[in-house]
Image (tube, rainbow, N blue to C red):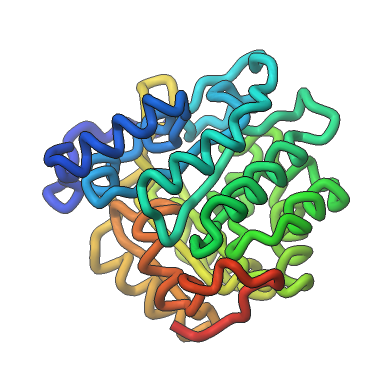
Length: 302
């Protein structure tokens, strides 16, 4: 096993939670009995995002049926479905006056439809109550069952996000149940249907330079237009150790490389996560403000 790095470099200092907006966001989340990936995944940007009045809502509970070695979300046997959740999520989006909302979920391999029905109901509830809000979904792979992916797509999210997470060689030890080719197929399926498609990877978990180039090219060929790249942070000593601290200069290199190789919007930095500044990404991408359209958002270069 690689040695675990302990002290974080200066460029990984995140903002502490402060301010009225942070308190209002926290109150909205708690009042609506919502789970957020900000809390469950120990996101380093919680303070900054909540202080800006944004949060990534996590549906289908807070217990995942998978046990990826990089992820802080609790694993085990999930609780029963909360059928009132879509309406509460929609209410929270309205309460926070969001122009762009991000919804994600745990993997629910225990359900026949993988949770796709709740996904669709949540998207439609948000759209009905917030017709001017752009909706980004960060979904699991639904075990590669494209008919379940179509249930989500039929609800017309504005951005379809599914993370590849890491390079091809590290998929099995890091993502366990997930598969590299399966994730690329899910992304390609959404892109082929005309949806603005997004994905992301972590650095600092054991990848090599040529492997990063390979996964980025594979993602671009699959139709991914929006890319996020961030530093892997070990949630607990039981999780995969950090291989190295990736410098801001290297993140800048990968942003330039990705843009030169066909990606249209790239967020690359130590604290970047899937939904970090997602509202700004969609604004650059021409999606915010067209959320009430019934067709998938058309791509625009950032």
